[in-house]
Image 1 (tube, protein in one colour):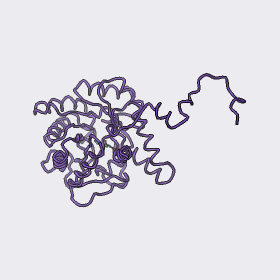
Image 2 (image 1 turned 90 degrees about the vertical axis):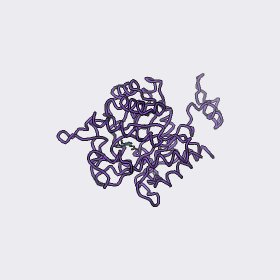
Image 3 (image 1 turned 30 degrees about the horizontal axis):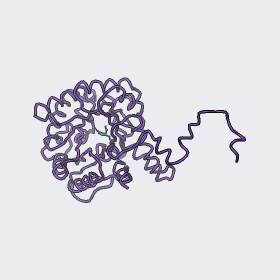
Image 4 (image 1 turned 120 degrees about the vertical axis):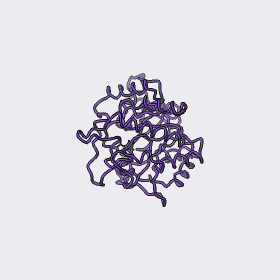
Length: 338
Ligand code: PBG
């Protein structure tokens, strides 16, 4: 067909910049790099084969030796950091999460082993009590009110943070949402001489339905069909953006080195606002439910796995995230290495 017969009288034709793969490459504003990626990994107390996590296809709970191997592969692909989570046996759980500080806590052994084998790989270690409590909450629960007790929980988190960096963690990432924990942990680390270990604050962690598969993975659910744990007395209300900015401001004032938004894909506005508010690096956590959702739809043939995955991560980066915790880290790193 002849264009000139039907030409609109317009000067601006933005499509000129999209007409070929080469020009699209030139004009692309955001790119996902392997250096943007942090791989969350699960470690189990028991030996044996890696256990597949049903609701997170392609993800496993590793024994310590296999975890070290996996970290080696991730590092070889160029991934700069891993975030480690333990799965603790029910018999080691109690209502105050005592096992968090037990010398035998597998997380300490895992961090030591990974650091020894791969000293350059940054180890981010989550700080919260949910893997260790029988009720699955991130802290101590007041029996009368059912509310998580703030200050006594923070005291334990400080000890846990020191123990984690003693084992070799480079960065501790408190995911508990207690008030004042960043300042308290900073003081505890400094007083123990760990002035160069960082804090990645889960500043804007929302009480989200999207953590379900993770709770399966770490076994912080009472039973497979138990209703989702209600963490609304500490995690943020998904309706609140200003409150998220307040949390970010407080964490920055208290000495956080980096801030995080979690979940990521549904909270792009929060990522963008936080990027504006702070000069600290802003991380985003594409959580288990976001990963599971893409996989489930792809399994049904309703969405294309690769393109949905890539778009979900690009959108998080475009919103302003400096780096992204994602269960897709290895897949993406492999593609970028091709
Ligand atoms: C717990 C913690 C959670 C996640 C990371 N740390 C779950 C929760 O708050 O219940 C979720 C991660 C994910 O869903 O991938 N402190």
